[in-house]
Amino acid sequence: MYEKWRSAREGGRPVVKHLVEGAATGVVGLALWLFTADVHTPVITLRKVGVVLMFVGAAQLLYGAYVGASARDRR
Image (cartoon, rainbow, N blue to C red; front, side, top):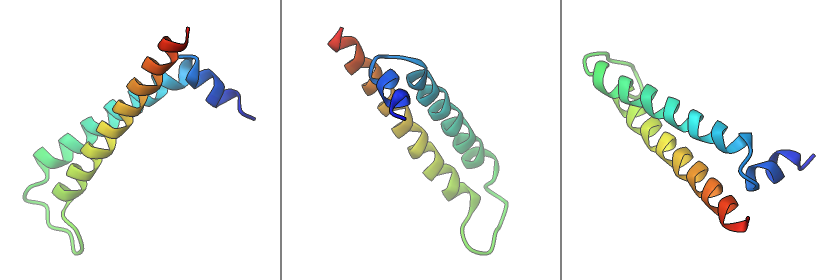
């Protein structure tokens, strides 16, 4: 059950997964922020959703980097 977390601490595939997911989320957020300025939705603008996605992507990237760096320090 805890294999995923243990391998993440040891610098395994979940670290790469966090980095790829964070980069993809950030790119999608950037695309929404850049290209949806004139799209109007009833509740919230897609531009604001793009900003939120960029922050979430950055947080995922930072977490992946932190887990990867802390796994290297333990070796």
